[in-house]
Image 1 (cartoon, rainbow, N blue to C red):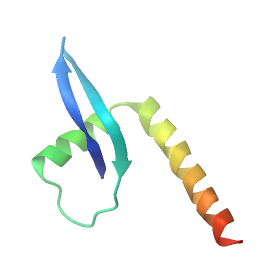
Image 2: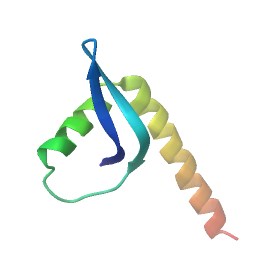
Image 3: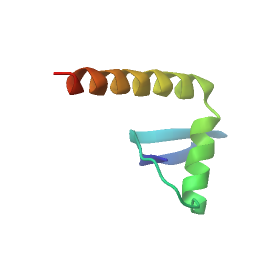
Length: 67
């Protein structure tokens, strides 16, 4: 679930503003969260970059746990 950003509409485009964080949720999303999820999912370059970031965080946690 994306959090910490907002969507600004202008010139026929949607822009995400803020610092994006993700939280795992096991619940039905509210309408605002559904719009945010849709806005993020419609940007394949962002989804790819964020997936790489999450892989790096996972590896870092695994390395730090091995200390």
